Image (tube, rainbow, N blue to C red; front, side, top):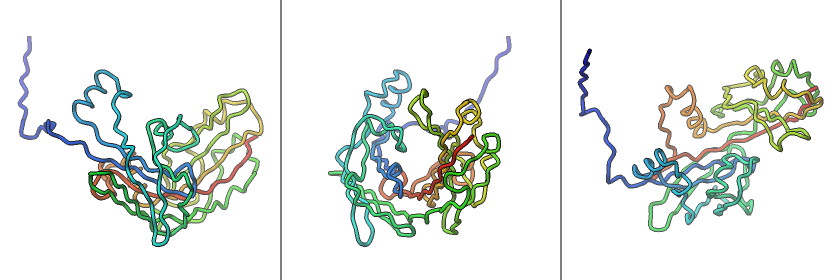
Length: 275
């Protein structure tokens, strides 16, 4: 019988702090697309709560959402208050799972989006610290090619060149290809590209997931191509959750007095028909 002994340097082990006090986390985005205009405010988990989720699986019984915050976004002229909102998940919106848990939205549509303008975020929680953030709205990436309502053969779609107006201050671009569900299928819109980031145009759709394009026999399938221009804050967050994490580190924080990000994106889109 072989017995192995291992020496462990306990000075380098990070032990959880039993007196840890949960911190406030803010995740906010603003955009010219209502689906990407929201603020989430919640608390981090204690070690006990995390263990309950990990070993007992009762995540639904632990609520971290803060529902009494005063949240507003403003520029040098206007201020828009975001209202706490809860309802069933809506797949048309980014971070739709938070709809049921609670999310802050610009329900009165008071926030006017102007590309190139700087916006400020302020989150006030009664009896606690004030969290702030800032973002500069990217210029809208106007799509040049393909043209609206173009007809493209399915077997050539991945070779399609996508070109748009580039802007030097944009941190990066993300491409989405949304396939509309057809009659008889689930009522859903498939995103066939996930976390596909690019620094500048043009590009092709070579990274597209072929399953949703070639496993349907329908003709004249509607497809929406979206180009998203990301500000520096949101781009750093995206790359910290991807293979770029070694460049930026795994911990991204762009707000003051809390944890999280406040970023912005602008979006342009075109509809094409696959046949």
